[in-house]
Length: 170
Image (cartoon, rainbow, N blue to C red; front, side, top):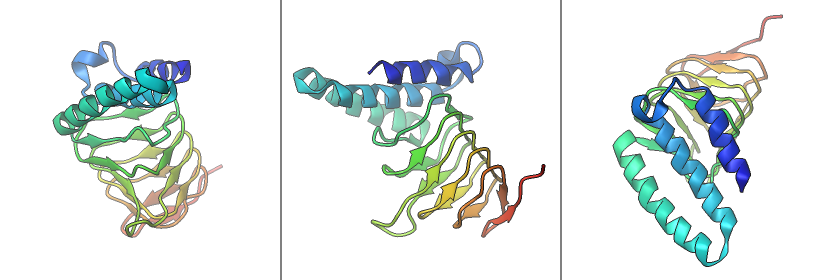
């Protein structure tokens, strides 16, 4: 259970000083971490905590325009720049030290279809769409407004619609 709070500390290290005043997305990550912690509690306390999570989740989702369900495992050190229009499928996975910008979608291509796996240290540009059962490798970059429908190798860059892969440089 302490893992989620340690992960939040790691998240906040990537934010400027006083993130609670300057960055609305810090609240999204805090509520997300709280929801995962509440799930791990179990019992009566866990049920009460989960009810509190859902209230906080709906408020933060409405105010910030960021949908990050507690079912999504997010590695420590996540940074969400700006806010608004971010939708993440409840079965997606996001690795450590990832950067998400405004307007992105990480989801399925059809209802019930496979969803993306985002590995560690991935940088996702504004309004990028990552759809379907794709894997975005560690250290990859997704360009702004790209539509990623295929796997992105580690360290590579994906740009365009549909995204084309630019291999990593040595």
